[in-house]
Length: 154
Image (cartoon, one colour):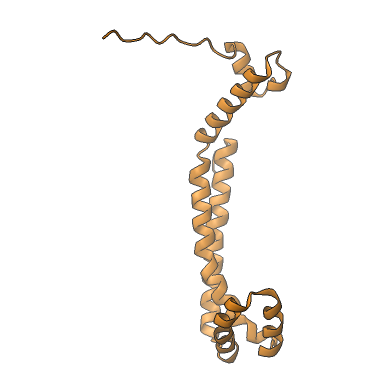
């Protein structure tokens, strides 16, 4: 069997145009090209920039740090509620309007227990853990932006 020879397609842009677009000296919209060619070039450029800047990795790291900081935040808020003078009746009345009844039936005993017994130690641990996890998230966000915009970390 004879193998088919794949002919190379001509490039969508000249080397000069590609350098001008990559460097930001020329806008893709300003080039005198057919609309379909502009769309192909745009998609190609977008895919290249997404893969070069590791957006997927940055998004995964930010999702991880957000989830990591969620549980200490809940611990902190749950132990801080009694210090604000909230009563069970007032909080339950508000939550009944905001949360579906089947979820409220599950949350009702948990909220009552939290408001009856809070721990200063857990409040401190929750605050420290929340700040630690949030700082990891902010650092991950900073590193992601630095990578996307090509800024070297100092």
